[in-house]
Length: 208
Image (cartoon, rainbow, N blue to C red; front, side, top):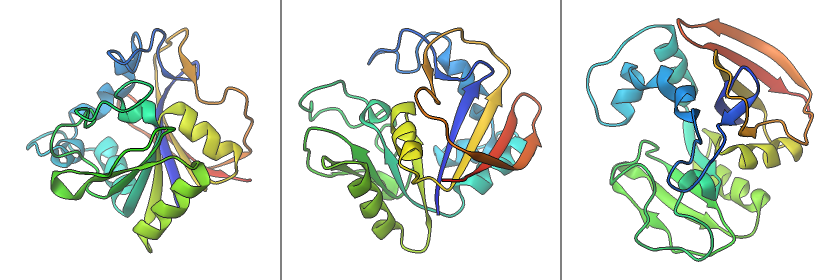
């Protein structure tokens, strides 16, 4: 099973305008993720204690329970364009929240980066199919998540390689930025709707 989950605004953006290496989510983009920061499941994944428990936390727990590997684009991993600055090790510190192999799409090779907690970033230069194949091999019987950003998820949707898409619909209007569905029109079948206090969780089966 290959899944993807993203927070999205009412006007279809998964990042705000003015994205940059210093502000990867763009202006207002952080609002897309504020719903998750106080949840006990999210805090536990980041080595923190406490937090709220409710339907949103249940959704986060469910969507991360059986993940064996991730694929992400270079913009999500960060570090800028061009040849790698080897000092850049991602946004997440020494103990990233993934705790599995993470395959980073890139045009520039780099040696694997082993982090604390079981996360290992592996850099793939020969395309989305290779990255997914390697992730599936690493995951075994567990699921693979296409983590983002929008460009990576679009490529996998366009190639028909995602089985389940979960969108966390946040009631904000960004007015610009990066749209998830620019240039693609996947056929989706709704399979679940969960209404949280500040966000609505929509799960779709991708129909090829």
